[in-house]
Every structure is written in C-alpha cells, then in structure tokens.
Length: 148
Image (cartoon, rainbow, N blue to C red; front, top):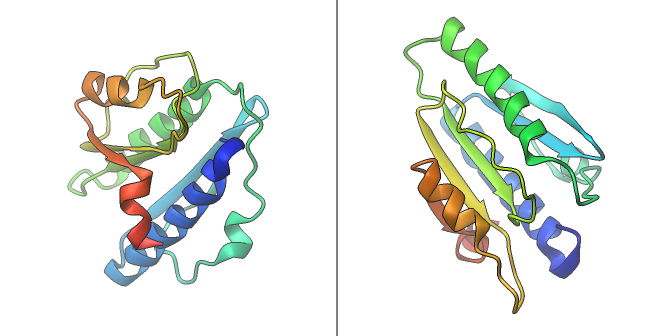
C-alpha cells in the first residue's frame, strides 16, 4: 500500500465514507492492520467528527497478514450481531490485494464491499478473486475518488 500513493488514496476514501456515515448517523468502526497486528482505531460508534488527524497516523508496512485484520473484524461483527441482531452489518475492505493469505469471509457480515487500491502496470487481481470468493461487491478505488 505504500507505493503509488495507494495508502493516501485509501485514507481519503475512508474519510469520505466516514463523512457519509456521520450524515446517515450510521455506526462505523475502523480496524487497521500492519506491523504484525490489527487494531481497532475507532468505534463502533456514530462518527461525530472525522478528519485527517484520525487517519494521518495510519501506516502501511507491507507483508502483514490480511487474516489478522479479518479476524479482528469478525470478532467485532460477531459482537455487533449479538448486541443488535436487526442491524445490517457491512464490511468494507480497503487494500491492494498484495497479501497472500485468504481468510474466510466473516460469518456475521451481511454484505461485504472490497475496494481495490491496486495500481500500476503489474496488477495481480487478487481483490477481484477475493470478491468472487466472498460474494462481495467489488469497487476500484479510482472509481470512488469522487467521494474524497
């Protein structure tokens, strides 16, 4: 995610998505994974304000297991399903698909959106494949740029 401005693009899209969530008064959470760990950075809560101070510290080191992020999301989604069973749970995944691991789709998610931040001439297409495996919506980050 560090090369080709992918991380900066993803951060801008996250900001735009959180702004939309705040307008809709939707609860959101942000899980970041890198450096061998996955951390819940925000939520779950309705974002009252959201700006670059929250997103700026998000780093990308590469080589981190995608499974760590998915496991953290699955745990959060399971808890949300128990606490608010009638609320739709949507998992948004932003990334470049460079991770080699393929975790299973979390069971407590109702809908998944894969946002592909891959750029450059050598596209691996792993996020397209993951979207098929998870029966997820697939979006190219560059097509979402109008949000940011």
